[in-house]
Length: 298
Image (cartoon, rainbow, N blue to C red; front, side, top):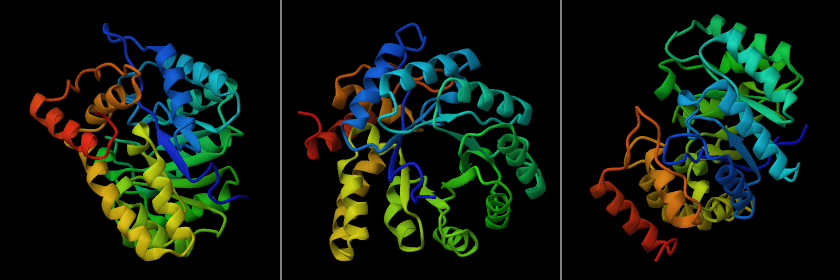
């Protein structure tokens, strides 16, 4: 098994919407193309940044189909198929597999607040239902529950197709613990752009990124410098990257990054769906100033 399993930099792709709020599948395919030409080693479609929480099953499946067809196996396409309903997660993962995706991102169940055994049984049910390689997604800030390293290790031991974790608890010590209990070939992806360097120092080998929606070059540079042993250079590159990453979180993700995608790529990503709202003008002005400082917009 290779590590990182799907490539070093995966973009949590935004989902473009039309003015009426419907999914703009053509723009989504165009954005997927832009991303793989601008630093992305793979794509995560219909994750948190893709506003999966407000998309129907039919919309997600059509989005998977469109992106898979456009990318045509040039890079892996990972489908966000998890939810807080185990049966629905199983069903969606099976349907996404039939669409030709290369992997599944399964979020820890939100709202329910399962026990650690509940987490294990949830991911076990999905793993047993599919041949797809699975990324466990731990994001306590959105789910209200943390998946323990011991449970991730147990899942890795019991299911060959559970191959990676997107660790977004923001806790370097937890990444260090994951690295200590997981097999060497198991991939730990940082779920936070601003934490990639400290996470790599304790065992992470890749990043599932919001920032790379507007160009992953600086993130690739940080990771390459660290991998090459140019630690001080990596620190300097990281210090330059962090303000740009922070600008993508002036408001709730993906509100800022959707606006940034439209400005930087020229591909209209549209507005977010309710209950998310368009970016406040003052915050947008601050973000634009940062984009200008980095030469991403004029």
